[in-house]
Image (tube, rainbow, N blue to C red; front, side, top):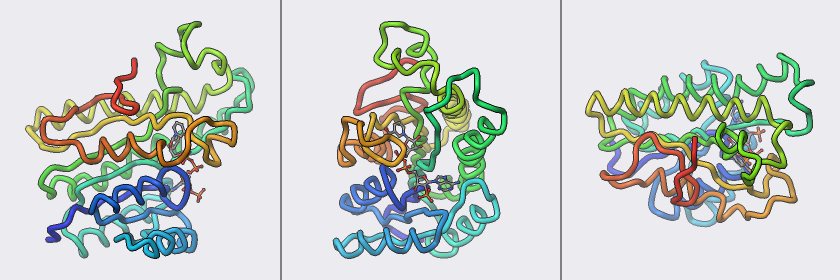
Length: 245
Ligand SMILES: NC(=O)c1ccc[n+]([C@@H]2O[C@H](COP(=O)([O-])OP(=O)(O)OC[C@H]3O[C@@H](n4cnc5c(N)ncnc54)[C@H](OP(=O)(O)O)[C@@H]3O)[C@@H](O)[C@H]2O)c1
């Protein structure tokens, strides 16, 4: 079994996942950079390797359990464990009013953001249990907070009405995280699972108008991935601050 910490990040060929891979590798973690497209994954990994970082691409489409299972087998054969799983892959559409989003559009968002995350976690859990102190980071969003969406004075108030499916998918991730955290706690497992809101970050998903740069946007995921033994479990965080559910 590898003595290095091994991390796997889904959707790491670009955006926040890519920067998270860079920052974790800079901290001495060996990073498997997940990408649903093998070529995009290889190119992204090559960029980080050229910076002297220990990263390798791994093909995972979170909506295709066969690819997740193949990745589990690969990680098991190569490392025998997984220390950190960052469920970062995500998608969303913020252009449609809630009343016009179709069930097909809801399903597309839930397939990736919720069902993909749940299945990826389920399949990697045995390898996380083999690590000394597994960490799971689920990328949600402040847009998953029901209490903030319902508060007319909250920072998200101006966008409410235009992220029903995306927001609900992140709310589902929040609930899943709390449920899994409690289950692991009852088992006396050393695994911690938390929710990260990266901030509103300049990426293809966040758009060019976002105020945060990638470097800052990856920090919450990195912090939760490297939590010490007395760190949080089942929490909802942005840059060290707790968010309301
Ligand atoms: N940016 C923000 O302001 C913001 C705010 C709050 C939360 N978030 C969350 O942060 C996470 C990362 O977002 P981002 O802004 O970095 O977005 P991004 O730049 O659009 O990157 C999304 C990543 O997810 C991958 N992906 C999409 N569907 C996938 C699938 N089925 N299987 C595997 N990978 C898949 C994409 O791969 P391809 O390149 O192949 O499409 C890409 O690598 C998401 O969960 C997002 O909801 C972002």
